[in-house]
Length: 483
Image 1 (cartoon, rainbow, N blue to C red):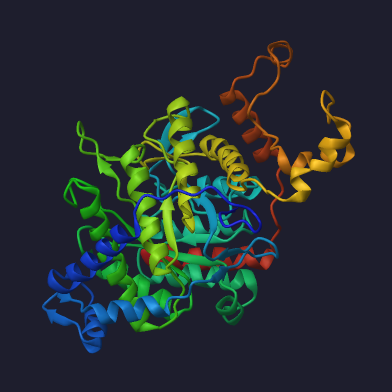
Image 2 (image 1 turned 90 degrees about the horizontal axis):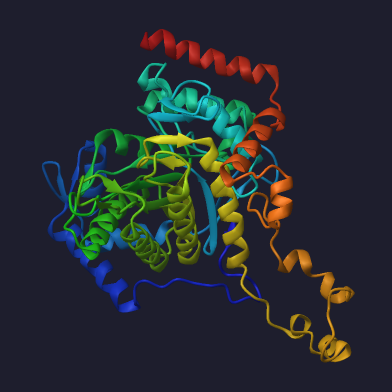
């Protein structure tokens, strides 16, 4: 976790939009929802909006500004997603930035055989174990979509693997309400029952909206299920700029915010005060291929601006970082992740996901997770900024040492070394001679060795045998139904 508003520090910040620009985009968003409306495929959601004063025309719903603003006013600004064990929770609050992987990659980079292959059972468990060992990863997503199970059941298998390989908070998703129920049963079994889970949820539901301005039946069903079951909710979507929005960043931001706020309004009408995070990935299309471009500078700019919009509204935001267009972990992947992590931290996004994505969110990579963890640690030190006070200026110490002296052996200075100077785990700072003597290891090899050490030696929190039996029982019942 990075804290952007450090007590007693002036943390570095990024500002993309002026206050007038923020207000212009928000006002345009409200006008868009009232004048253009949004497609709402679920009848229950249309009924909720209609009862609140929206105009419903078949599946198209026109939202007046007051019901959107009322919904914004009741979204919690602060809440907690708990871990299975104390000290693992993440506190959703202004100025706190949390990092984790993304979901549902069709392919996985096999670190052992060094090939791209279809994601399969076991991959989410490895992701969770590696994330459990990495200090800068705050929550866990699966980074995979299994090819060797019934596709409907993949999120349940993913969740079962994650929860048995980490006690950090989880973010999951569901293909239908039955899979959400199964995931909830597993989570309840992990903490001792549904009432405990209700008070201290250890996971959040991940749902999406379609661009432009479309809320699908299944996505809305999942969102309303989360509200009913007191599970924190993440709602995120596009648009792909130039395809699902006009090519301008301003139009993309209006469409992002309109879709996200329409979903937020429906959820808050269902159960006011439901913990909710909205997000957007307004990536631009590549002009040569029309694919979304995660690594583009426009993506950084648009996401930072989207963060500012939601901070203005007081609503938590999910952004994206640590994702590359590269097909392997290489220099390109490192460049893109570094800029993304830095700008996400500077802008103050609440949750930052997709760490470990390669090939435009199509390949999950354990090695890339390890590399980006080091980047986050480096940025975390940068974000702490500088403490400026009498204790840190040390004018009396400078006076006592005097001109021409040095401070290496001064206890008062030395006592602050660890808090002032970041020490990397992976970046090389040896002289050439020492680097040569240690085997001339490049970054890729150092990452690989750390990953292998984690997979071989890291011990995750244990679970009682009856918990594993409960998981097998739930999965067996689902398999019989979907076979």
